[in-house]
Image (cartoon, rainbow, N blue to C red; front, side):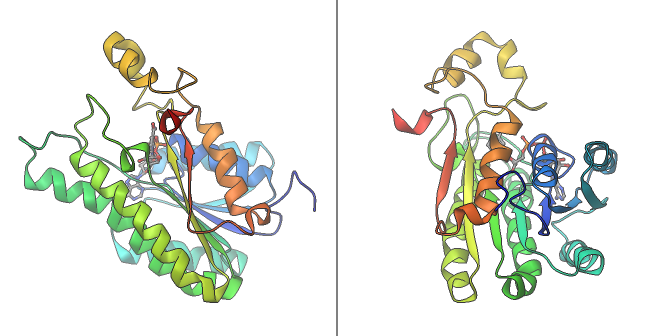
Length: 255
Ligand SMILES: NC(=O)c1ccc[n+]([C@@H]2O[C@H](COP(=O)([O-])OP(=O)(O)OC[C@H]3O[C@@H](n4cnc5c(N)ncnc54)[C@H](O)[C@@H]3O)[C@@H](O)[C@H]2O)c1
């Protein structure tokens, strides 16, 4: 096996392909030889990822705008992938949007839209792609979070933590149900990764001290550092890995 092209000939769906971790993973999957199928509700960002992958010599198509809280959009992504490439081998369930408030002030709308946009869409994409993964004996990589494992001081994450805890549990259930079909399912739990949404932490000394100080490495992670782990889990290098979660957090959970 060519270790630098572990996904050659594989068709990989990446949700939230216009975002930071999604884009880094599209570039990594394409570099590993995959046919990448992106999708995002944000069209301009999704388009830019397609451009960057093409510029790097990779193969990528994209469905956008695609709001994956709508099951017809999920079905369209899967149909587009099979029409173009004939199969789906990998689903990287990455796209999500969280809303934050504390338990004593959160309203119903903030709770429900976070569950919908962080948990429901993972289920909807999984169900939509399942028949294709049964055919291909493929695999799923979900994005959970450090928030699924620990409360984070200063982060009003009651809905976010609940949704990501659901992703973690769903991954184990899906791995169990997939075992008879040769389907693997795993999740990654990023800590604080430097993206447009987290960069502000660096501007706030107290946030920075509390948040980054939790990591043994005392720095933010980079989207590439998530993508490389996801590429491993999606590849046959992880052929005996299922039903588990990989922390990508610079050591937060270990001390
Ligand atoms: N950045 C971090 O520190 C961090 C930490 C832990 C977990 N995560 C998780 O990593 C994943 C990617 O986050 P990111 O930091 O790259 O954020 P991001 O905002 O850059 O990317 C998320 C992408 O998902 C898309 N998206 C959101 N809702 C969608 C929907 N309903 N349908 C289709 N697309 C939708 C957005 O448009 C965006 O492009 C998320 O699941 C997030 O919860 C991030």
